Image (cartoon, rainbow, N blue to C red; front, side, top):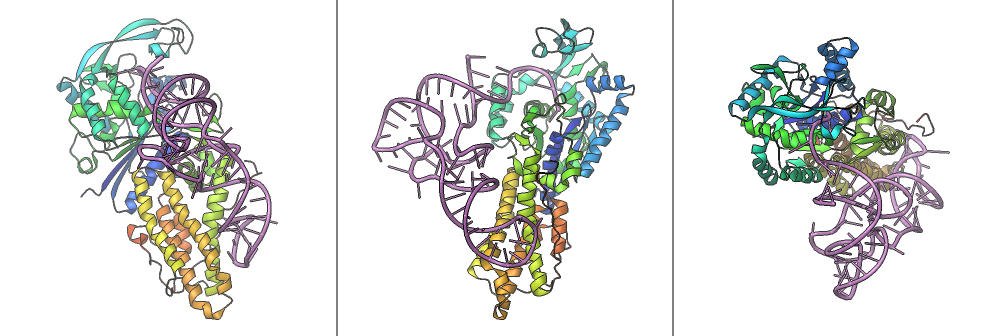
Length: 510
RNA sequence: CGCGGGGUGGAGCAGUUUGGUAGCUCGUCGGGCUCAUAACCCGAAGGUCGAGGGUUCAAAUCCCUCCCCCGCAACCA
């Protein structure tokens, strides 16, 4: 029944410019979305921006603009990056939009009506010169981490969410649903965290004004997580029972970085429980990228700017690298030499060269027209079986968000193709007119296998797949029907492929 | 202090649940092929599986001790 699929990225904070980490999460979401679309699902891919909070308010003041002006400016940078990365998002939500504010306000009211929100006091350390509250753990020797001046303990009135009430229910849910939090190591962390006891959560602030006012008490604004997480609902139209809401909630998967796991695996589910809404089916926390072995940080000036990467290496090479290099869920390292290495060895030597050599042979031996295959030998059948098994393998890998494994499976078929050519030695067959039929069969198998491989690759590398399929005379968009052996028709004109990925000189300006 | 994950040929990893010839990718070396982007295919070298002890006919795999690295520890995309 459920041919709907809802995948989300976090909403990114506009106090930061887009970097490799943002691109990574969003790319992963895009691959899932494209894959599910190919399988005939009705897909909703949501991304967006978190625009409220003290940091934005301060940064805007410093820049002499309003918070919304700042947000408008930064939002464009995210959106243009998603264009550039070929992200097929369905909707882009901004927390400053009316639809979102309305939904958050309503959610607040409903949870309040249930007596799960109450007014209390919140104690923290305050740095008067900086006008900033700090938690005790943020302090350095009880001094302000920003200016190193002494801080004082101050009480602030705050609304609290009764998170403690949902501790047992949350634990029961996590234990009853082993796939709810992934990967497993993160799940364990959350379990032990919850077992230590949940405290009630402060969900409002009076120390700044840039946010959604607490209904009935506008001295307070709703604090970050209650506001931000709710985007997953408001983008679907919540609180209205829209078609989107009915079709897509609960989400199939929230993709997030490991830093915001707790908010998604603890706060968010308990908010939803309080609101009487079903919980997302899966929360997957991926790892972090280091750069050339070092932590990415502004002070080290080594923040990898995705625009630059795409300009330098091309969109699909970047998409490929990020999802192939490291198992989703583990930390990884980005380096230019590793990037170039992947391009040369996987994309140029294996993938591109296979298409290149095989289409060249069809042109050379059959004047660029695909011949009909004869009877398949054992070698052909094994190769065909391997190709036919691929879509199923990729499908189950992606079900587990094992992007890297899925790509490896595709490359197994690509490698099998290179080996198949070696074993069948078409150049030898071509010299013997009696082997004309045999040669035709080999040509057919080698191209048909690649047709399937490029179909399964298309969610990862949409441009490349389209181009490659074009050389094979395949003009339709990738679809589930295209995953079946036998799609290529005899007499189809085959174009000799250009190098999909020219090799990069390693000694170059890498 | 606590909880969790990990230490396997030059690099990055799998294998540890259900003990029994240590595997993959890359790199290195040698060979083959010539359709192709000096690409492709085959083979070889290289590891006392963090250290020590124990159980066992047999341990990377089970038990104990120790060393080292990383994550979580309440509000930090």
